[in-house]
Amino acid sequence: MTAFIIYKAIMCVGIFVLLLASAAYATLWERKFAAFLQDRKGPSRAGWGGLLQPLADGVKMFMKEEIIPNVSNRALFILGPSLFMVTAVITSAVVPWAKPVIIGGQTYDLQITDINIGVIYLLGVASIGVYGIMIGGWSSNNKFALLGAVRASSQMISYEIPMGIALIALIISSGGSLSLKTIVEGQDAGLANIVWQPLGFLIFFICALAETNRAPFDLPECETELVGGYHTEYSSMKLGLYLFAEYINMFISSAVIATLYFGGYNFPFAHEIYAKLGLAEGSAMVSLIGFGVLLAKIFGFICLFMWIRWTLPRFRYDQLMNLGWKTLLPLSLFNLAATVVVEYFRGNIHF
Amino acid sequence: MQLTNRKVVVSNKEQSLAERMYLPAIAKGMMITASHLFKKSPTINYPDVKRPIAPVYRGQHVLKRDDNGAERCTSCGMCAVACPAEAITMTSGERKKGEEHLYREEKYAATYEIDMLRCIFCGLCEEACPKEAIFLTDRLVDAQFERKDFIYGKDKLVEKMDARIDVSKRQTPEVLAFKKVEGLKHNELFDAKKLNKGHKH
Image 1 (cartoon, each protein chain N blue to C red):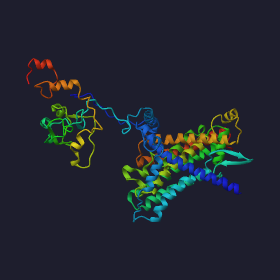
Image 2 (image 1 turned 90 degrees about the vertical axis):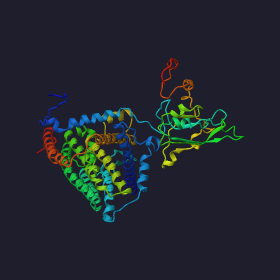
Image 3 (image 1 turned 180 degrees about the horizontal axis):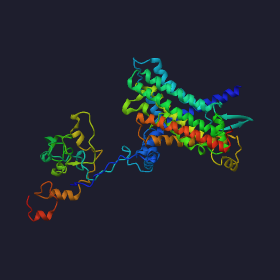
Image 4 (image 1 turned 90 degrees about the horizontal axis):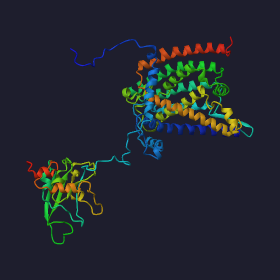
């Protein structure tokens, strides 16, 4: 029992640190990547080539004056960013990070918890995430913040529906399990889910962009129209939490996309390569390689997120709603129907 | 009557399916931004790397000393007369006994001020100077918070003995020869033959 608690504690702390570190460096990479796309240099003064920039940003955020408007609802004003950060972090609980390690005959899953409704948990936590924005924007008692919050909530609701339907199609074609561990292991034996769900992936990816409030769906913090959007009144580390949680969300979204559609920690010819290298299945080295592969996939998706952000202009709000309800929703329903037909002929569905 | 050939007939035709999907257009746009990933950034890391400036750049002035460290300026006022912006003012002083190592000639500039806000950095002062005392250098005039700080006195203009300023790029033999031509006015190109033929001045 003690060993179990220690192992879970190590997993939780390790993944928490991983999230914070990767989000911190995602902020730096975002600025660097934007600079490269725009023929600039990006931050380069702090540390070696700018490597200490996230630290400097963090210190700056902490040292800034903290302003809580006296017309705001103080308790909710503090709750907003906290909730947003918490929901961003706890999404990581169901993501399988690497192959299970066998130490002393005991199998250790490199996943905080493998719940059998992992996908529903993901959707649920993602929906709670909007409360952080909504509470923050509403409690600021500022028209711009309120508008940003309203936009965020209606955007989340609109895009969760096609996202959920795309996930149903994915679950049908990947064997009917809602556990992320099972989904990943299914892709180890067979092909990655993207092969059977290309349209589903496209829908899920667009919805993931919308759910993380990344450009071109960053209307909640649309600074050209809404000053700062839902975090207009926020300052100091509370603003920092909002901005930071966005990067954690982006990291988790990339991890989830990689896990659901691109085989997670698996890669083509994995078993042949492990056999050639003389690595036993279940050894720490195999897990480490798998973890590295997953991180590489996540990095690729983060780059894609950023690439899109620095290419596409922001949607107008009616265009956003049109895309969500009139395009993505019918498309996801079509995808679901097509998946059912295809899976019936593949023999995975029996009536 | 057709004035230009730039007339374009605007069409409001329906978008095709491919156009309405936007994905090809998005892919095209993303390829444009991606192509910039491989372009060289034109940025110069300024404090570390400095843009090369022309050898004849006209920046902040210097009042030269001679090889013994005595000030060359004799306060003749030629520079102030030549200055189109009237940026130069000076007062003269008489050299006393024992000051020979400080001032090269018997008369010297007791004060010498250039208003850097008036100066247009044309270089006529150095052209006018008969004593090779004033030169424009490749140094930039620093930013200041107040106007009065832009009036540079001798403390800033006279070169320090431990930090001599190289003006050899501006004081070339050709320049010296140019200055020795009698009757030559400013702005005229150096052409001795034309002068000897009695070119009008």
